[in-house]
Picture 1 (spheres, rainbow, N blue to C red):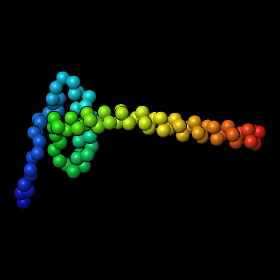
Picture 2: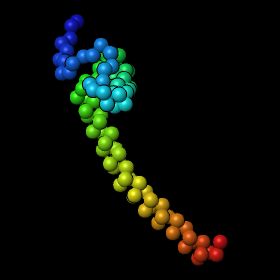
Picture 3: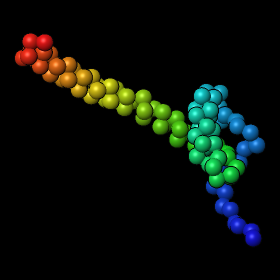
Picture 4: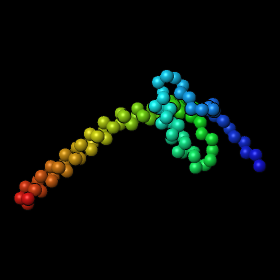
Length: 92
């Protein structure tokens, strides 16, 4: 039984970076695609558009890390302050 396949991207014979600066992003995007689709036994291809999306995801993670770290630091300081108050209260 034949199944029709609609191709939205350009299939690559081998991983190729679209420019001279995307090698790390290509590695991340290709690994993600392999992990996501490998269990379905499908052919994996990474397009230039996926490289751009992966680059944006990486930038978002880097930008959000400051907020996550700041929130974690505030919680850690609050926990430490509470611990010090308990030590003083119970004279530990």
